[in-house]
Length: 346
Image (cartoon, rainbow, N blue to C red; front, side, top):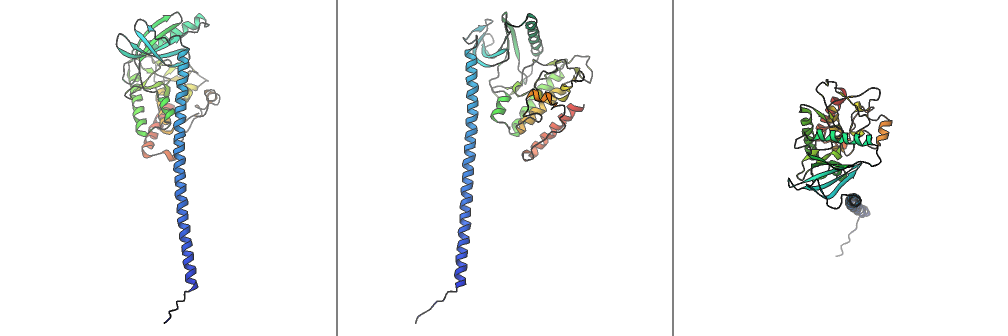
């Protein structure tokens, strides 16, 4: 007996279509998988590129440091004031060089800041620079707090050079940290800003209150344990006892780092009145920068443009990137807003 099987053409077509659809689904998944793999490779390449960029920046800075050290007249391991053995140059800027040194009396590492007077300066300008440095020393030497860099000593080297001796902090400054990691984890940003505020509270609770006036990433150092310390009191102000609640007159308009100064420092129509709120504002800017990787006002502007366009005076609103606003960051944003309104209208 012969069994004849007759297959319906419709069933064949359906089977073929089903097979094609299945193939398309599989092919689509293959493409998606391949695309995801390519994206992972791209992200890895971008991370590697960023790592090389950071390394390039570090090497460029190190090459500059070495060139500056080679050109320094203090690069031959001198012992200053029969006490401080100079080791290596840490940095150079303006009219000063900073060397790591060893204190042969106290047996500790210190930072020696060597101030050089330009031989071409007039005698009046030299005396003005010296008075400014002595004023900074007299303010700084009285400050004893674990979140403020200590100033140990000051002495003359020769007719055109003198040295201030500071606590040595072996870690980076906040500026270098933010260049390597523009957006800090919230936990890290929180502990840094808390330490800065502890230092500011100390300055504001003294019998003679002190306004730092130049709080910025480069003036926050870290020691070997990661403890943050405020430094550089070159622009600081002593608040006299007779100053009222409105604040003291600002006599050094134009000084400071504009991105971190509040609007009252830019009032040109009258002599501005300032108080410790200046430092509160600056700390708020630091907090914003640590959390969002940019300064809230004039981030892409030069200091000249900020001054020319009244960027800080016209600042009315702090903008935040929604995709970065975690619940924790929102709480920090609220704290920053409190600093903002406190500084501007109190």
